[in-house]
Image (cartoon, rainbow, N blue to C red; front, side, top):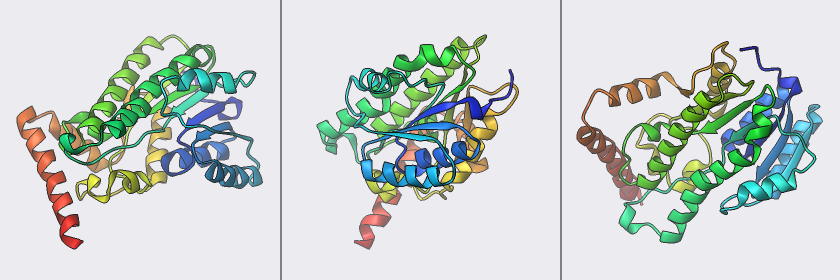
Length: 268
């Protein structure tokens, strides 16, 4: 497969106002890609657009809440006439409480944004992506590789994203489209402001630029894999999870998250 020509790409990035989405935007702009940035917060998008434009980038922004079932159709209509050659589905959030304590509406929004909208947006643009020589990156998580007590819904949504993306990788063979699921571990982003600080289970966090660099290195391989776990420790942990029973895996992860939550509550 030929190398990605970033200067020929117009990359749609969801959840682009902060964290990994913003870091992907910076790295891709530096490689010469045109960008379409989508997020809820218009002010943050405007700040990022100004930063990247000042550095010579070409940036379009769309302020839109993607936590709706018809997000793909709405976004595709908003971009009528704008050719999108590559896409990064980064928008998502997590919750961190026992499932029976979660707010039902919040859970529905989590599933809608993390799964329904990701699938809908991908379907709305997949024909355009397959017709070119670009890429599709979907943000999964190390949470996709094991049960996640206290984060049951989040982990399940990311397991879906991982499986979905790897299937699309196979279906896209023979086209010019590269498909990659990226699974970060705990990362220094605003994710924990929403999910709660204990959602990292007390593990060490990577920087956003480290995650993005690892993702782009995998994407740039001559024969890119269907998925990549970023960070050496995260790779070890996800690999080790395959060697133990599901009972033990759920118990280990649940204990980590419970203890992390207890440490935080004891500080209050």
